[in-house]
Length: 260
Image 1 (cartoon, helix red, strand yellow):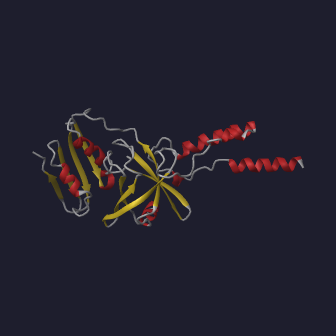
Image 2: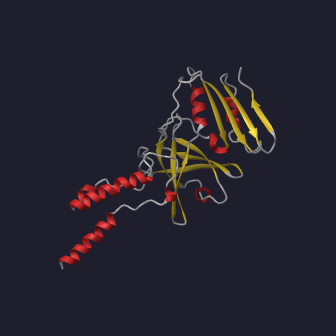
Image 3: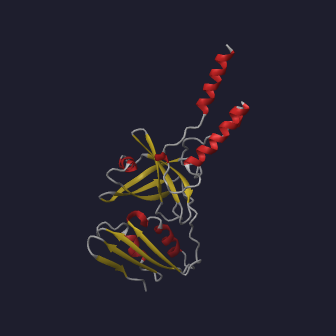
């Protein structure tokens, strides 16, 4: 009888053991904490609790799988955000807007990003994306997402519809822009790699006291494939901003004249 109770207790402990993440659950962006950091932290806590046979030590072992978007953004916990609009800006790229409660702000600083969680055919995947909306935006945030024909996350994103819910955690990123620290910034980006540049550029032009000179070079295949044309045209009107677009399939260079 005692042996049966011991076996049942052992099985109960095994059911409480943290599950090691799959490689696909790591976005590979060097986030801190990474999903594996959280796993090893929880595993150590579980091992200590089992050695002492004290399940109270497991309290708070794992964060809730997800919470509503009314909760505060957290690097450890995925929060649910509703999709309010989903615009197809090119044949394979979407501009997606997510709602925030009331007039709240997302809370990111220029240079930070979020992690998106998706599930495709039972496989959980995570990828890093940088919101392109102004850091001062209230009630929403925008994300530019390019989809690839064989990409797992792309399959998940293309299944979205207005009103659906997506799960994000963050913020991540320690390479933060500090206003007025540099006299000049050179930004080089290709395709959706422009996304991290957008909030930094906008924070500079929104700040009348920040006279940092910015040169942005964006690389695209064709003129039609350039993202956010209107935004960059408006930014190029500022005296301290100059933008160039290099086209690989049109053998051209587009220069947006600097503002007067």
